[in-house]
Image 1: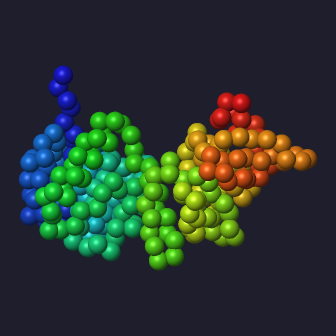
Image 2 (image 1 turned 180 degrees about the vertical axis):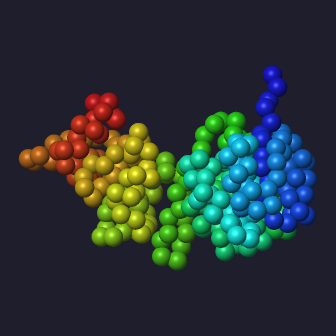
Image 3 (image 1 turned 90 degrees about the vertical axis):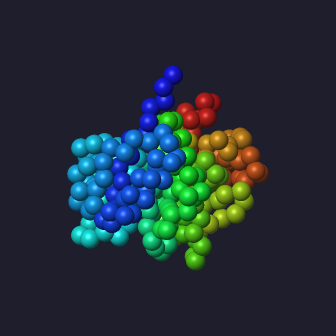
Length: 236
């Protein structure tokens, strides 16, 4: 069976840089370069017209930069995206834009090969990257949503619990609920969201309340109004 080649758009305002990405893709194999763009404006037009599977995207370009391209297309509508840039200061923002990788110039061949393999794998599976970028003070933590055990409101912040550790993140509980997959995460209280896969037991706890016990022993309060939605997800 012939494996379809990954259709790629290369975006960079420097011709030499575009040529470098092209050569690395040709060396990696399995890619079809459907076009190049020398500006953010051209990139927007060609993403819409060519509908590539993936885009290797420079950050700093005249007029419209790489993030402007993402904003114009929409995070949810972007092809699988790898940022290629000479500056490391944009890495956090790149991952917030759902980029699957961030490659620094001059390009390290082994590093590029790893990114190319991730692109191939994601395009072949048809799955979109779902990582979350959590800012915890000076620290930045990039996680898969499946790693999250539960989330708790804390004023204008939320505390995201992963393997027993809480990360204080500047998000409201409502915003976190929007970002998490509703088929895997459920609000059980106005201030609490749980990963349904972590739930071990639900039992009554007085009038109109329930206790949700997680597999790690964490005990959480569930309001009665949320019981039916959780029951629908866990099948009981």
